[in-house]
Amino acid sequence: MPASTRRTFLSWLAGGGVSLAALMKSARYGHAQENWDEVVAAAKKEGKVVFYNNLQPDGIEPILRKFRARYPDISTEHIRLGSNPLNERFGTEYNAGRHLADVVITIADQNFYKGIESGWAEKWSPPEAKSYAPEWIVDDMLFTTQQLREVIIWNTNLVKPGEEPKEWKDLFDPKWKGKVAMNPPWRSIPTQQLIVYWEDKLKLGDTAQMFKDNNVRFFEGSAGIIQAVVRGDVAIAELTDLSVYGMLEDGAPLGFVYPDSGFPLSVNRMFVAKHAPHPNAAKVLGNWLLSLEGQTALQEHAGLPVTHPDAPPRKHLPATKDLKNVMVDGESIINPELQKKVVNHWRTVFGVR
Image (cartoon, rainbow, N blue to C red; front, side, top):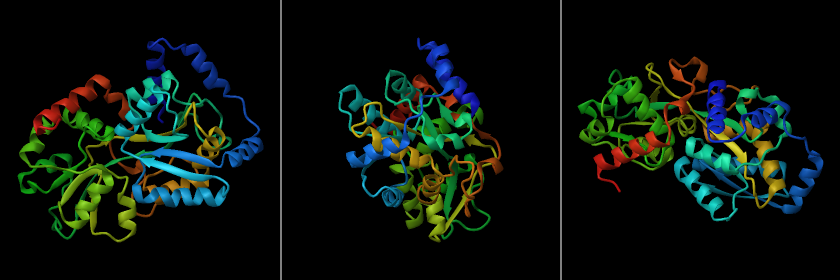
């Protein structure tokens, strides 16, 4: 996570009554290191880990298969949801005292941070954390595993060369009426951030009404969107690049562009649940996800660039550093009140309740 975002998080927590001095002390000196051999031995006795995540659906099992190959005594279960419903589900379970998840990967928003402040996450020091720059770790609780970028894709069999969309404003061109897909903002935090970027930074206007006029089609999740494009149900789409890499690897007829006008960068954060039912197995999986092996598996099967400094480059998609006008502090442009305003407006325009 960029240092500016980390400062925003720390200041927000301090404003909510949390001791910033105590927080910074723990962040400065780190958490006491456990005997890792004992943690692994206890994890094997627990024999199971439950993983809540927002990863590419068809990539989760290959990732967990590699984890089980490394730790064959630990079985795995997982729940996959979009970040918004995933955060809501975890928060509802936590508040009800139903502690079912061991490890969580999701996109953070300020409601998420309220949950972290209320006790969602375990404070610990994974052995693999030493490989990471400090800006990717928040108070020994949140570990940034991946970056999500916003992209426009199209079916190359349906969009003629030279007619490809190049900028966000092109999505509203009447020639694409009924042929554009996207995630509904009521299920996607990155979509909410991008809408704010469109309207506040790029001054594109009321994008909900513009998309309504252009008969935009909603699909649930990046995987559903990209499959619709490949099938030809729609010609073009806006989505996070969660599923793009795998489709390109498989030779799907996809073109893509990261608009030069930029976008807000979203990040996936991993934490071990404070009241994890399998606390040692949770730490073993969490540590493995931060390892070079785990990060390589995430990059290969989850389709996103990862944060480990030694992760190999990807063949099909550019590195974040090579893209223009990336707003690396994407979390800073949205808050719970603005999220609610965006979601309510889009629901009203599209008649969705």
